[in-house]
Amino acid sequence: MNTTVLKELQGRVPSLDGLRAISILMVIASHASVTCGAQYRTWLPDWTWWLFNGGLGVHVFFVISGFIITLLLLKEENVSGSISLKEFYKRRAIRILPPYLSVILVVFIMDRVLSLNIKDINFLAAITFTTGWWKNETWLSGHSWSLSVEEQFYLLWPLTLLLVTSKKTRYRLLLAALFIFPLVRVAIYKSPLIDQRGHIIITQGDSILAGCALAMLLFYEGERAKRWMTTLVVPAQLICLVLIFIVSGFESNASGAKF
Image (tube, rainbow, N blue to C red; front, side, top):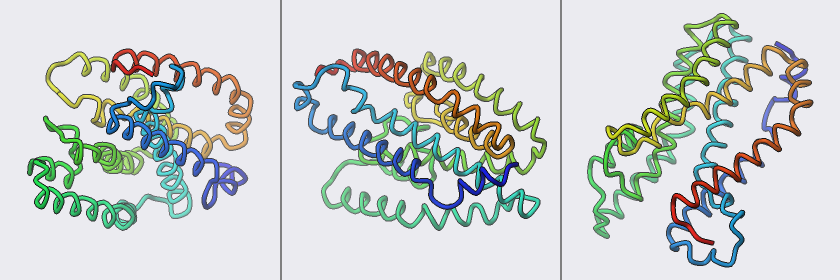
C-alpha cells in the first residue's frame, strides 16, 4: 500500500468523470440510433460506428465501477482492519435506490396510463435486479440490466474481499476469473438456454473485474504500478483503439447497420 498514490486518488478523479461523460454520450447516441432507425447516420463514414456503440460505453462504466468500489473497500480495510458489509450496502442503497425506484415508478405509471404493455415480470426483474436473466425483456424496462449486473457485483465482491484477506490469494482469484469469464461467455453465447445471454453478470463480469484488478495494483504496488502504467499507457491505448474499431466493425456488419 502506497500513501502517495492513494492521496492522489482521494475525492473525485477528474479523468474518471471524463470517461463517464464519454460513456454517457455513447449510450445516448446508441439508444437514439435505435429509436430513430439509424437513418440519420447515413452521411457518416463507416469507422464512426464505434461512437454509437452503447455496449462499449456500458463496459467503460463497469470498469470504473469495479475500480472505485475496490479502492474504497481496500482503503476501508486498511483504516479499520476489516470491511463492513452493513455500511457498504447502506451507502449503496442510499445512493442508488431513491432515483432508481423513482424511475421504475414513473415507467410503471406510464405503462398503466399509456398501455405500453410492459409485463409484470419485467417490473419484478427490474426491482429485484435480475433483469437479463428473464426472457422477453422490453425496451423500456430492459435498460435496468446494467444496474442489475452492478448490484450482483456489489453482492459478491465485497463478501469475497471480506473472506479472502491474503493479497496473493486475491491476485490469484482475479487472474483466474479474468481468464475464465471470457471462456464462459463464449460457451453461453453458443448456448440456446439463455435468451438475454449478453446481459448477465457471468458474461459481463470480466469488465468489472478489470477495474478491480487495476485498483488492487495501485493499492498494493503503489508507485511501482504507477510506473508500469505510465510506461505501457501509449501502447495499451493504441491496442485498445485498434480492438475497438475491429470489434465495432464486426458488430456493425452483424447488426446490418449501414452508415
